[in-house]
Image (cartoon, rainbow, N blue to C red):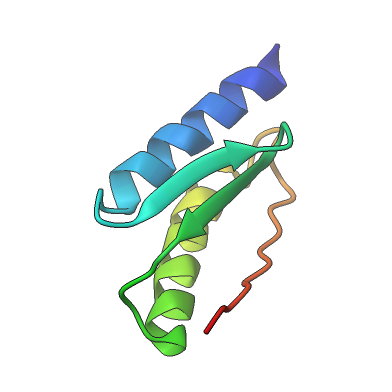
Length: 75
């Protein structure tokens, strides 16, 4: 139950940090995708790092102590 609550909180955080002009989705249970189509690779990475920092700050002390980032860049 606690895991589901954490996933919901992370989803809310992503909705708050990533604008509607970008795409956000949850997939495969405990993974999230953020698609930033109108940014350079450098801008995408900066946004990803800010979003991850917010998640880590909020959840690092609880059950979501391990947060991994996998940036994927498409041309």
